[in-house]
Structures are given as structure tokens and as C-alpha cells.
Image (cartoon, rainbow, N blue to C red; front, top):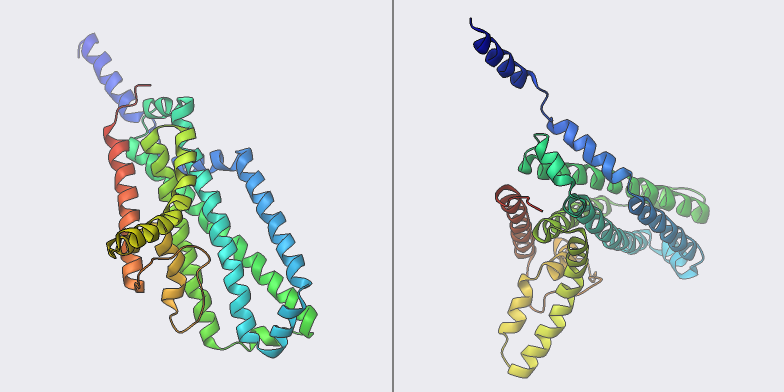
Length: 305
């Protein structure tokens, strides 16, 4: 073998043995980035403070205590709806901010070029970020359920002297709890996809944050605009459009999954009657569009800036 051939063989062998970024390693790296952002811990601290204020307010509410003594099931539904409405809203804002920051800061700081130069694939990087965000969302939900469960146990025990009002709840109460957890998972998944897509589309941290945080308020306000257009034009077509808005579909989903309960959504809902299947299809369609946009733009657009 000649000297030149030997050099070529050694070079090729070095290339084959060169370490490549692994997907688990990329996920760990994204989790580390998110955990070291001051914004993440500030938002969690504010959320814990607000939960504490809510707990103190509930402890001092005589009407809630009377309802627990008179009808534990009605009391449980009321408190659960309030707790999970607060969680859906708070976790949505939190995940929109964290997902937009986690993706947008790569573009704004230029670190995405370094990551790609080290061999991380564009779609692999996006998948690692989405996986890290999903893990963080599950941890967030688990932490909330533990905190809420401990709070309710302490509350009932202090008011009634035992946990019997909770342990004696019928099976339908726990089924309703499971449905609410599923709704929370759906809501968190949509928020992760929305925040990530906004950052990918705008290729900027500022744009990602602004677009993702403005989406749902605009979506909810859109029902008011559509209602006014219906009144002005006299055409019901505008009301029909509201059935295909993401925010109202998410708001109405908990009520649609339990139609026998007389619960009300906390925010805007579609202006026409829809069922749970329709709402789930609308939510799934938006999620698929967000995911497809993120993947396609991440895979095809060059990173030149």
C-alpha cells in the first residue's frame, strides 16, 4: 500500500469513528438549556405563589366549606374545574414561552449554526426540542397533580376531620378527573407545537414569543368579531367559521367530553353547536399543521444568518 493510500484509509477510518451527536444526548442538552433559563424558574415561582394565594382564598370561603359538607360530589366538581382551568391557562402560557424561547434563542443567538456544523440534523434538533418539551410538560402536570392532591387532602381533612368525603366519591368523579387530565395533555401538546412553530417560522426569539402569546387572545377575540359580522350581514356563515377556531375548540372540549354536566367554559366557545368529535378533529388538524410547518421549514430552509 502506498503512502497516499494509507493516508486516505486513515482519514476515512477517522471519519467513521468520529462521534456523532446522539438523539438522547440532544434531548438531555435541551432539557439542560430549559432548566438553566431564569425565565423558567421565575414563571414557576410566580405560579406557585398564585396557587398559594388561591389556596388561602379557598380556605377562607365559607360557601365552599358548606358545599363540601352538603354535597361532596358537587364540591369536588367545582374545585376540580377551577384548579384545572387555572392549570390549563398557566401551563399554556408557560409552555408557549418556554417552547418559543428554546427554539427561538438558537436563531437569535446564532447557535443553531454551531449545532448543525457539529453534525446534528435539522429535523433531529427539532425532534429533540419537542421531546424535551414534552418531558417537561409531563413533569409539570405530575407536579401539579401531586400539589393539588395534597392540597385537597389537607383541605378536606381540616374541614371534615377525615378524608371520607374524598374516598367516598363515586367512580364517575374519578372518570371525570381522568378526562380533565387528558384535556390538559392535549392543551399542553398544542401549546408546545404552537410556540415551537412560531419560533421556526419567524426565526427569531422575539417573533416566536410575540406570535405564540398573541395567538390565543386573538383566537378568542375572533369570536366577538364573527358575532358582530353575523349581526351586521345577517348571514350565519360567520358563526359557522367560529367552529374551526383552535382556542374556542380547546375551551369547549372539557364540556363536550362530559355533556351531562352543566359546566361552562372559562373563555370563548364556538358560536354554533359542535360535538366532541368535531372539536378533537379541529384541534388535531391545527396540531398537524403546526408540526408539519415546523418540520418542513426546519428541513428545507438554509441557515445563512
